[in-house]
Amino acid sequence: MTTITSYEDYLKEYKKSIDNPEQFWGEQAENFVWKKKWTSILNWDFEKPEIKWFEGGKLNITDNCLDKHLDILAEKTAIKWIANDPKEGSISLSYKKLHTQVCKFSNVLKNNGVVKGDRVCLYMPMVPELAIAVLACARIGAIHSVVFAGFSAKSLADRINDAGCKVLITADGGYRGNKIINLKNIADQAMLDSCSIKKCIVLKRTKQKVVIKKNRDVWWDNEMENVNENCNSESMNSEDPLFILYTSGSTGKPKGIQHSIAGYMVYTHFSFKNVFQYKDGDIYWCTADIGWITGHSYIIYGPLLCGATTIMFEGVPTYPDAGRLWEIVEKHKINIFYTAPTAIRSLEAKGDDFVKKYNLSSLKVLGTVGEPINKDAWEWYYTKVGKENAPIVDTWWQTETGGIMISNLAGVTPMKPTFATLPLPGILPCIMDDQNNEITKNSIEGKLCIKFPWPSMARTIYGDHKRFKETYFSAFKNKYFTGDGCYRDENGFYRITGRVDDVLIVSGHNLGTAEIESAIDQHPNVCETAIVGYPHSIKGNGIYAYVILNSDIKKENKKQLKLELNELVVKEVGPIAKVDKIQFVVGLPKTRSGKIMRRILRKIAEGDTHKLGDTSTLLDPKIIDEIKKNAEYAY
Ligand code: PRX
Image 1 (cartoon, protein in one colour):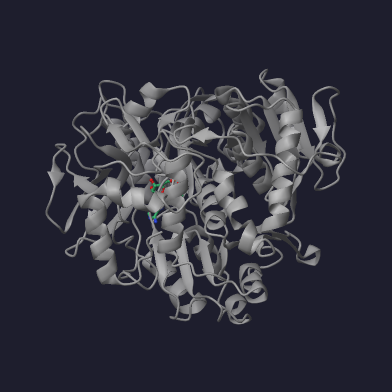
Image 2 (spheres, rainbow, N blue to C red):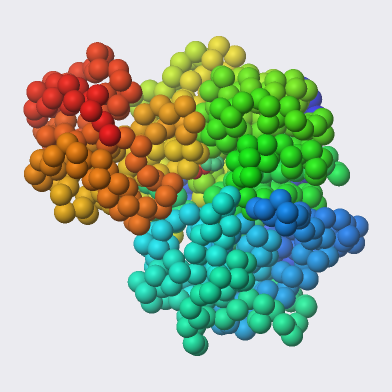
C-alpha cells in the first residue's frame, strides 16, 4: 500500500495516479488477499453508466478485515466499544474474538435462511453486534443495508421494501444520552408494512419488554448458543454488491446507493491510511454512527482493513455532560479523532471549561466530515482541542463516493482552514459553470464534478439504474456530478460551499426537502409546503418551512399546529428532520411551469430580503412582498 509521507511524495503519487490510473490502483490492490487475481483493472463508460474495477477477481472483504490479521494481530484490540453510560465502561474485542463472533453470526444468518445475494436490513444501536452483523453479511455474501436507528417506522419500512430485505436485525431498544429508543417497537410497526421480511433477529440491549412474534422473531443470544465457530468466507466477484446505503435525494424516495466489494475495499484502506496518516498502534476514533457512510467506511472497513484499533461509541457528545468526548479521548488515549462540524459547534457553545478539564495530549490528528466547517469552529477545534499540535483534515466526500475524495493528508499536505484542499490520488475533480463548461482557471466558483472513475464509487441505485444515470451522470456529459457547489482558490485548493440541489445537510445529515414536505402535507389543514435551509449556528443548516394552509387559523393555534406538523415529520422521517421555523404563507413563488423558486425562499429565510435577484419569471411576483412582510412571524 502506497504511503505518502511528504508533499513532494503526494505530488509524485498524484501525477502517477492520473497519468496511469490502472497501474496505480493495480499496485494498491496487490496488498490484499484475493481468492483469485483480477484479469482487468478498470472498465468504464459514464454514458451508461457502467463502472467495473478488478473484474475477474474473487475475494471476500472479511478475509482482509479479519483473517489476514490473525497471524500477527490476533490479540490486538480490533473494536473497543464505549457504552453510553460511563458507569457501564467499555468492552474490547480482539481481532481473534471479533473473527469468532463474525463466523458464529454468519452461521446464524445461514441458519435463518440468508443466502448469498440476499439483502439484510440492520436497524441497531451503536453496539459491537452491529459491526459483527455487518461483517457477517459480508462474509456470507449477503448485502447489508444499515438503517440509522433514528429513522421512523415509515422510513425503515420504505427502505426494507425498496431493497426487498429478507431478514431484519434489530434490538429490544437502544440508549442515546438520557433517552431510550424503542427499536423493536418501531421495527414491529415497520414490519406491518413490509412483506419481504421472513425473520427478525433481536439483540437484548436495554432488556425492556418487547413483543416476540412466533415463527418470525428470534433472540440473538439464543441463536448464537451452540452455533459453529467456523465459517468459510464466501468467494465473491470483485463487482458483487457489498452493501446498500440509503441517502436522500431531490425527490421523496430515498436512493439505495449500492457499492461493490473490491474497489470499495481498496479505496477505503488507501484513503484511511493516507488521510489520517495512520501508524501501527494508533488508537483511532470516529464519532459517526454506523448508520451513515462515514461509519461504514471509517469505523468498520477502513480501520479493520488496516489492522487498526477502532473505537465505537454508543452515546452522544453531551451526555452526561459536554465533556464526554474529551473524557474518552483522555481515558482511552485517542490519537486520531474524526467528527462532524455540528458536534464541534455544539461543544464550543458549551464553553471551554469542558475541554480544559481533560488531558488531550494523545491527539495527533483531528478530522472533520459531513458539511462545510466554518472558520470559528475550525479555530476552536484547532486551538482548544488540538492545542495547535494536531493538523485538521477537512475531508470532503459523499455516500456515493464511498471514501474520502478531497482532503489534506494529516501533517503531509498543506492545511487551509475551511478548505478540503487537494484531491486524493486517483481523483480528478473539475468545476463547471452554469453553461456546462469546465472552468480551468483558479479563483473561481461553480459546480463540482469528477471526471474519472475511482474504485469506491457507487455502481448504481438499487433497482433504479435510470435514476442513477439521471442524478449523477446527466447534468454534465461524461462526468460524475456531486450536487455540491465549490470554490477553487488561487493555489488550486478546493472549498466546498454546500449543496446546489434540493438536498439539505442538517447537523451533517443528508435530508431531502421533498420527504419533509410530503410529511407536512399530510396534515389535513395543510395545502402545500416548501422546505429550505437557513444558516444555523449549531446545525449548519436549520430547516425552514413555508406552509400554505387550507383555511386560516387563529394566531394562538399556530404554535400548536407547529407541534402537530413536527409530530408528522418525526413519524414519517424521524427526529433529525424536525422543522426549526414555520412561516404560514398565502402562496409560494412559482415559475410559470409550477416550479418553486427555492432560491428566493432561501434568501428570505436567511433574512436577506433585498437582493432577491431576477423574479421576472414568476407567475405572481407580488407573492414575494407578502412573504417578506410576514417573515418576522415565523414560528
Ligand atoms: O454537501 C457535501 C457534504 O455532505 C454531502 C454528502 O453527504 P452524505 O452522503 O450524507 O455523506 C456525508 C459523509 C461523507 C456532500 O455532498 N459534505 C461532506 N463532507 C464535507 C461536506 N461539505 C463540506 N465539507 C466537507 N468536508
